Image 1: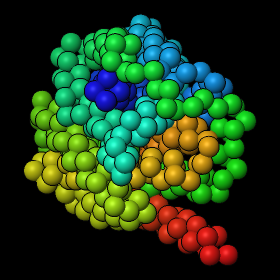
Image 2: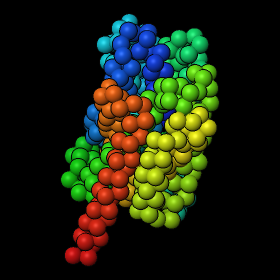
Image 3: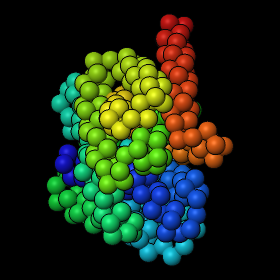
Length: 380
């Protein structure tokens, strides 16, 4: 479990540290901050493209071997980020680094669920996701601080080293995972014919976008709106990560008791918290508390969505589990884009929180419809 979570730690660090260093990257490559946000969207697009392609095309590959190959590819993508000479090559490198993301989490989640005791599948999935959450407590603040003081490329050197360590840990500690049977591309692609899979993915793609709309531009929000010193930003990022850890644990517990309730509870919390952040962002103390709560509500949603997808996918669980992260990164790309759009329109750095609350409301509506369709299908 620790080896699997270490991969999540590296992935979480590279995904979120770009947001913490966005002003530094923009200055270094001579583009505006909303334009620099395209690097965030490029990584997210890599996840969206890579998750279904890799999960389907590698359906016959033994699961442990696939995990190792995915982490090697992730490490190479981050090494290319370090070496990127221009903004355009940086965007390409971020896209390549994102390709293994969804498939890794999909296979790792299935591995955890397979190895877990009966009745504790969601907790086991949450344990893997805990690496992602822990990245926001240690990896992202640490790499952000390093990037601010030594240069943004140094942050991605750290991620590359984490990737190498994960490869070694997977080879040494993860069993062969013979309990997860390999399938074939057509079986995995069958997940895309299941309405409940598609609807659940849509809920994640829309509802999760609110968190990313705010978090992508969190550094400038804290400094220009809340009046916080730049040196304190990594501490707030750490608070965001602590919120993710707390939300991840709570989300896993709630999902084992009732997956649908857990999803609605997390989305409902996001609506109130993101709406409240519009006012909270004007004070450094309330902004810090708001960052913690945004992280908690977002992370609470992930284990429940992941578990629901595995439940409704039947024999196409690998693709469904991987697509969860594709959906969340559609949310990442859309949230970053919409947040940049309202900022570029002159509406200010609190406007993304308003957009985010609206996305969470839409997520609640979509999931309510999803559950209604599911129950209607069962009773008909």
